[in-house]
Image (tube, rainbow, N blue to C red; front, top):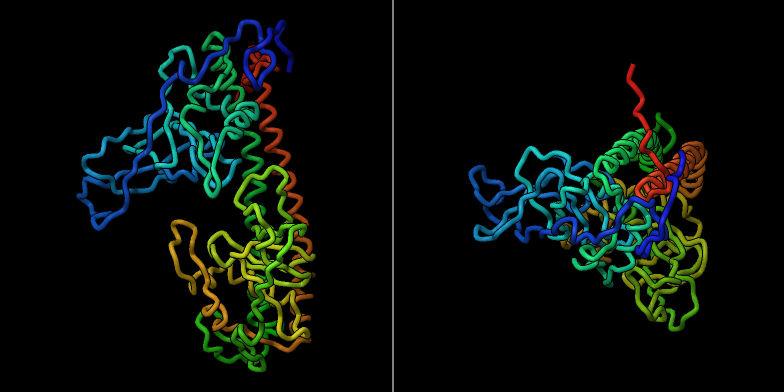
Length: 446
């Protein structure tokens, strides 16, 4: 794609130069922010004739260029005397509060809304009132890395990261002087990103299919064994059902020892449980949720199980491949019998996360991500317990039969990451004037 003929220096922090005929302005000169509702669910929630029931946009759905549609709406009860701002077609929605810096300031464009809809309290709406700015172009511009980073670095917070209103209203942006050129850029990006999004969706569907197949192999193998003709017996455990007749069923207190070893000193790698397993935490930029004094963290030895038992919805479990320390809020435990196959029991524990078996034994406030598994409940849960030889055979079988799936899943994830990076580069180039798309024509449909 060609460049513009001439450029000029910009007064923007994130963009050094823009085409000669482009302008710069602040968001407060483009439109106005409005707030989300502060209502809550109550006793009358869901009643057909309740005047309090309002649709709202869940904050988790505001990301990238998502279309806000009826499928992502939820309901909430608001107070009768509350003055609320209704979301309108063409509005931009900002995510103002999140646990992740990467999500702060993300926008979504409201392309259609068949129902009266309001905002979640973690969000702000932005309504363009400047007739010389196209809202679709503006949404793409705010997705560009140059402007996303300008917002995310301004966010503050510890357990929850928040963005102040002034950081958005004072944000400097650039745009072609003429709205027709803005529309041209928006149409170009609609076309290009639709192609990329379709490729991403295809790969994501493949990943979901393979992950489901993979989990089915694991579930069947660790709970029923590898012999389809084996005689079965009732395990007496609701989630487990029948197990091979020659297997035992043991409570976890007879399989695992819970440990609590406080480090007492600094200098260890910090280990964090993620959905991708146990990872060494990058503390170089001191962003995220962590303590400044890691001497109070637990020591984890190679081979220990580490479990986020405080959040049974988004938490996970893994076996450590190294010595380090981890949050005192995590649960660290080891096998009592070293002859037990750790891979077999890891597959079982991970199954309990994926199938929400741990969740069914938990307690807390799930809406706030605080659904935890108490030590007593954990110890009293029951697992199937085949012989060591059969545990090893099952773990090896799973490894062998999921190896190719894991390879394809990883390749697809890498490909998705590249596609998303390519998508971002196309957006950034177009909305900052690095490429000239004025002569671009959408391909004609046959």
